[in-house]
Length: 242
Image 1 (spheres, rainbow, N blue to C red):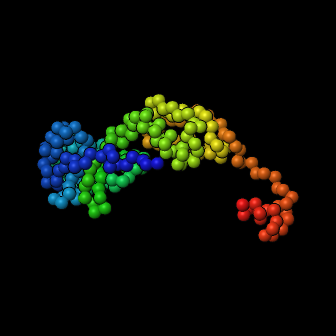
Image 2 (cartoon, rainbow, N blue to C red):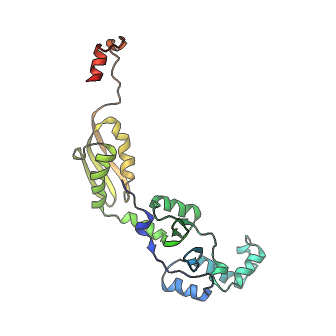
Image 3 (cartoon, rainbow, N blue to C red):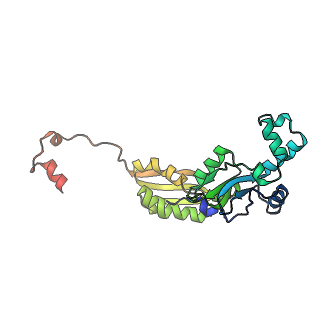
């Protein structure tokens, strides 16, 4: 079961600025390219930070009222520095949240939520910028076609992950909601069906009920011959060799 990764939805080679880029130019690029943040990079594409609409709006507020209560959490020196900043490097966040291109989208969403970030910078192991992924990019997973979801459930999840015959289960997918009907071979498989299908990228919910052909959760009664000592010619040992 392959999950979508950050590299599948990120914006590669995004627009960037340098620490010396004037703030007016940063604002112009944010508006012109309709993005919420821009990576700040060094001459060799190393990540120096990220500058966002929020950073520019904070500067605007502090210019008008550097001692305002809305910025009381900032030290006076920091408030003055932001209010008088002229370049991206002076107002950027120097510790942006980054992910690797092979990060699963679910993990990227958790990272974004935890850090309350509007975007994540995608870097390689050396710290070189590869792309940017936004919250809107992560939402693309919910646009996966129903046909693709069904094909993965029938062709991969059922036979390979669950080990059941897909011909025994009727799978219907409408707007990301999966409806299952039919049966699986063993009762023990039922507990794994729901989580396995929900783990498929693009699945919104799983409904329906499945039957089972064999109840493998009941242990057979202990036979009298099981109490007999095993020898190479005993019935128990013979069945094991067969």
